[in-house]
Image (tube, rainbow, N blue to C red):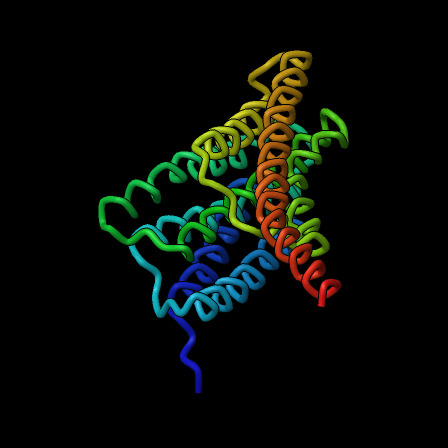
Length: 247
């Protein structure tokens, strides 16, 4: 019998507890409860599978920080599902804490020498989902085009299902981390309605442009590496063809 790691179960319990707290303080309807509970169950299942796939028996110190962020993002998703598009202080507060903790988990990983491929992927998925949820919330007031920010990463992954070269690892770039942070901060600020409408639209448009540049450059780098890698193979095929014709 396979033993279920404690981390996913702790996360499931913590998110359900957060949903109960939100229901008693700011109110949470059926849509919010359903979305939050769905995040708790699906997130726990995906986390269990990821741990097994990477051969990780338990969450490390930095992973626990990321799990805390995942719980907060589940709360943001629940509030966004219930929100009518007006100011939602609880949503903004949870998102802001999740963004701050995004700097903490990396710091903890480095200080405890527990950086891992699993931890990096876990952190990436939590970031991506938070940006998706915030883009859905902000799109209610600014328009559907804002969803391009939240869907960009998932569209890039989907493209990789058809184009194998897009799945190849890309050189690490700090700029990618900066752009990802900009998306979360801008969407949270706009969700809090701290900017005039026109300035909010401009800020989100700039964030989207930075995101497009980041994904575009990554795709270009991978395409360039693919063509460079194919060049030697083409030379070998050509030489073999000439030898076959000569024989």
